[in-house]
Length: 55
Image 1 (spheres, rainbow, N blue to C red):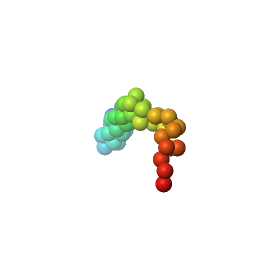
Image 2: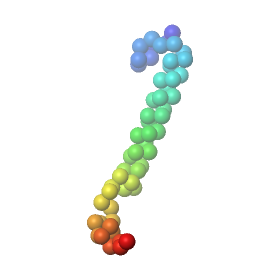
Image 3: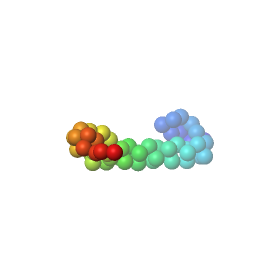
């Protein structure tokens, strides 16, 4: 058993927690980059873009 920030865990659990922490850190980095580049900005480019298209 190893003592970690989650308490005493087995080596297998420790490996899983380490993988999850690494994945979460990368996910947060991806979200910050996407937000910085405007991927989540739905109103980017103005509202006239949708009005200008005809069917």
